[in-house]
Image 1 (cartoon, rainbow, N blue to C red):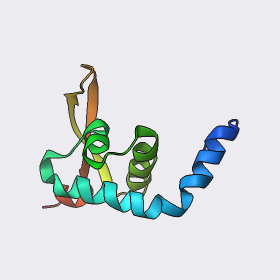
Image 2: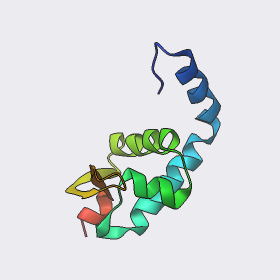
Image 3: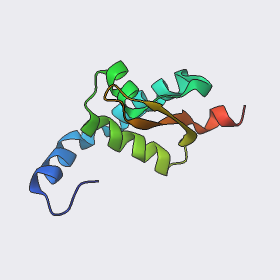
Length: 94
């Protein structure tokens, strides 16, 4: 989705739309491979060489689809801030 008040947000959304499923699959696959350790958005971006404005919407789609959940844990980012560790829902059930 895009910010309705922003023409540039809409343009970016429309530009990535054809690739969204592939990008979402890459994000999901990476999170699954991390197992119960999970990954922060920053780690996902770094590993996949994907910008945050591309990665985060794909991860949010996975959360909305109940494929990825907040692990309840956090870790420090490079800047020292705490970030949620995301985990594949199926890893919780194992």
